[in-house]
Image (cartoon, one colour):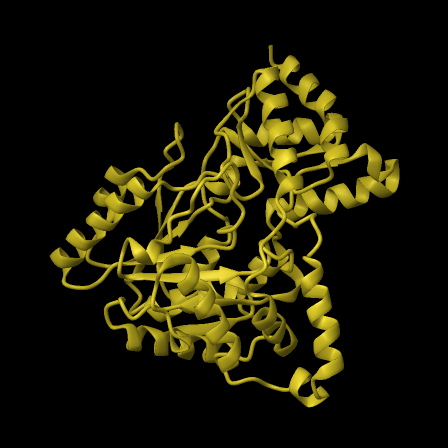
Length: 396
């Protein structure tokens, strides 16, 4: 016998993965040049050369046991100190190495925080639609209830009235993802200040802190001088979950962290609960080699020219055809309104008629939209434009 819930999760891949697998199969049959795959958020720009050089140097100048052996459960002191120094320089904070717990990427970071905050079976964690679909199993399979704040379908900021209406005595936290997957929108400082005011007021009303869980793998992926507010500087009860998967193009290396600032209420208890959750889930001792790489490369920044070119090309081309979407300020996604009002139907028609693979917004709890990941080749975008034109014309 097996756990039926886990069996179902394992045997039912997400729509994103199903579309991606379909694209791989079609590429074998008709050639990859005839498949237009906008499904995965898999970085297409290479990691900075400094990262590759750091790997070579570490393998050359560091004893093998130190490269491949265990670190402390929460990570090397030097790695955590380097991250703290980077954050302090950039955001004017006073973060210390002891505020950081190194994780095997952003997903284990989020799961550890959720499990740490799930005080009992009535605990609730909120997320703002549209949201990364894995948030739901992350929450529901780790001891808490999942509550969704409906999308602000006009600006894709946060519907603050809905947040205030849905918070209750069991609300432990709210996941904030900015720049956002799938919309590409950056939440403004004004939005976050107003959210912070609501959480302080409601926390006082219910007698316990309500934490912001800031999911920030796209923090450095912004365009046109847009600034991403550092949420711990706005709201004291913020826990940050971060990954270098996107900023340094290292999704397969699984390296990130949890930051619990001293400003958090019960900061020490929260940190140890995160550490305990990581222990229980087997997520301690993040990859040693990558910890050492991050220590040397923590100040590296991504070269976003290619993503920015793709963003502008795709946005201008689609809006010129008559598609409607919010212009993304960050990440590498375009969230487009389906011209027929049905994201699933559009996705299926585009797949079958044009081998054009887009993810329906229903997956992000925002029906009637579709997500396009533009971390692809510029050439593929250009070749796919006739398919987009044919699709919108078919609905006129």
